[in-house]
Length: 145
Image 1 (tube, rainbow, N blue to C red):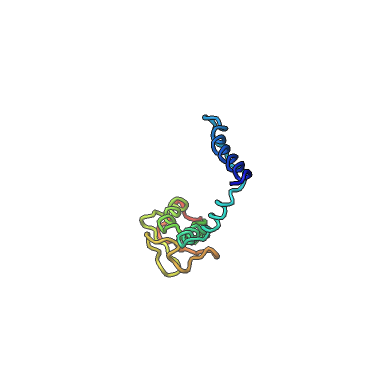
Image 2: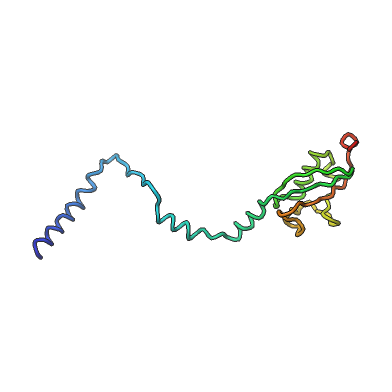
């Protein structure tokens, strides 16, 4: 083996034995600063939306609901597309004092059953206001005068 090759090999051996000793025993490695390109590339590869992500994004979309009350007045509130009819009824009870138990909501001529959500009705879209007719007894104290 030529002398130059031995010299390189001996430097590598020396570096391999000395470098671990250069760090003090209690010292922790310094955190890396900057962008980790490997992690960035991995994130970009995994950036594809899953079907579940698309569904969750759709259910979080805001929908303006306009309530037509039995006394002829109206009220409105923005709900998420994934909200249930029961949540709408609770709002009607809190805001307009129409009992949830006796309250019925209609989208056009179709009654909106409790276990359903706004997303279950094809006519409901985040792009336009949703008009919901409220049927139920309005307490006298809450009626429009």
